[in-house]
Amino acid sequence: MEGPSQSGGPAHSPPLPFPQADVQPAPRALALSALDAASMVVFTALVLALAKRLLEHPWTSGAALTVVVSAVVGYALADLMSGIVHWVGDTFFAEDTPVIGSAFIHPFREHHRDPLAITRHGFLEVNGNNCLALLPLLLPTWLLGAPSRTGDPVPWLAFQAMALVFSLATFGTNQFHKWAHQPGPEPRPLVWLRRAHLIIDPAHHQGHHRAPHRSSYCVTVGWLNPALDALGAFDRAERALRRLARRGRNGAGRSDEPPVIARAPGPGSR
Image (cartoon, rainbow, N blue to C red; front, side):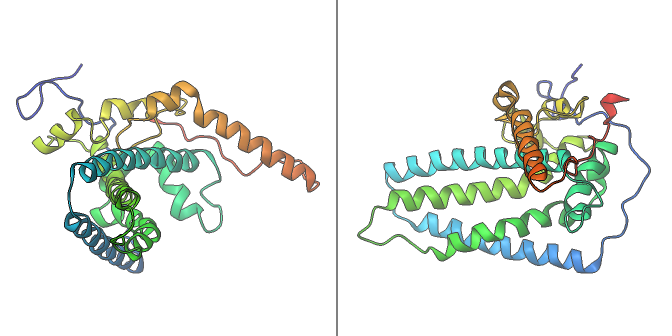
């Protein structure tokens, strides 16, 4: 049952009630920390440059409506992308898969074994990789430049606003996820963001940590989880991909299954 908020307002969802593990994260390699820091600096510079460009554009009621609609679409796309990445990381490959195993697969599997592990990682480690992943979107968006004076500015405004908000929401995704698991008192702004349904709510996210861990993959805000879960979108996609993989392997004279490991048991399955 939910209790009153730390801010004295109405009840809200507390962080996920998983036991605190004693395991401390291994020291992060200096080169990786430097890469995270450099990626974050470049990400911040590009985001500020894009925001400045948008603010300097002549504002009309049509331009404002275009930016608002595009911002909502960009936020929803970030939520969808978080679900797709989460689903892939939970479902396919193994932690010892070459190249992607330790960097990409391991954090997802670790999170099911120890949901509080994310709370023991620092800001750079939690958010730096998303900054790096967003640079291939942000840099071309910046290089597109301002719209021509004779052309229609609506498509330019729509794309720039959508890319900017998508990038900001994706940057925040891991941090929002971390906050959903963070024990202790919650700052008032965090409580407000959850009440406004702008970041993932711990009670909503807890659905993913119940066996068999096949729902509520989206962790930016969770707007799309009800529809995706009702449609069985990720289960359907998984079955389709496995069928394609089996056909490809049979065509190559191989009958073994694609390299997939079982989902790591979460606290809800113990």
